Image 1 (cartoon, one colour):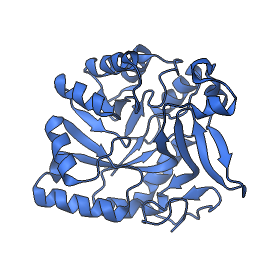
Image 2 (tube, one colour; image 1 turned 90 degrees about the vertical axis):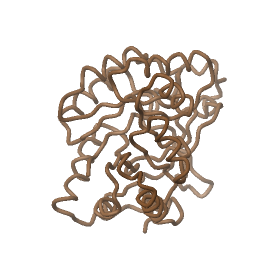
Image 3 (cartoon, rainbow, N blue to C red; image 1 turned 45 degrees about the vertical axis):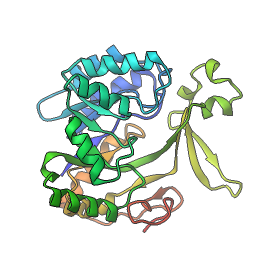
Image 4 (cartoon, helix red, strand yellow; image 1 turned 180 degrees about the vertical axis):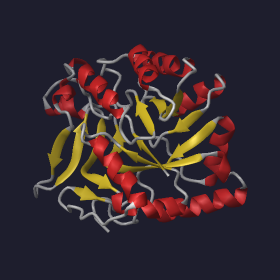
Length: 292
């Protein structure tokens, strides 16, 4: 079992991002994802900066992966994606089928990110032919669904052709929209957003009328209000055949979360989860906000 740091989903200043990845190099993470996956207007780091940073932090005992955008809206965004894939040295995480097509055209291997709806064995077979080497399960699927799918992959004789990664910690990315919710909350048009989401290091909390924190607004992305946490399911995921558990960065403290997850393999313990802030419902096939 390996543990990864997913791409930073929030808009952090360039210095903060660089400091985070500098410390990530000495963390317990086996795999480090980096790149802008949410909004192309977040230009603190451009494509060439992400590529340079990826090359700077890569080292023999850690794999570095460049993540692509999940929602494309312009030709310029497609050009940026092409630039990331064309560099050819760093593995790519495709979060849109356009990235899959470009990678296939360039004969580049890739990771299928959680933003791509891959739910069955037929889709896995297609993606394998196109060059997939790792599949990150969509966040809303359950453990039971995954176990059935992996059994089908075994029967089909393809299970050994790809790795399986599961989003295991962090605010869950639920949906993407052409509308920027953060700009709208500040009464700004999207074209004149003034990059206001950089003022919300962990997104903008949105409560229900009853005061329950149901969502987090992160630019064009809607996230879960509660932090998804599968730390008590590490052994179950390992037994199910999961190769990698993903920790999504929430702050610099997320680096220590990777170590906590990793310790569960050698010295497992039961962590009490806070039902007002954490959840694990999707994995257990119950309401997403619930704790099993």
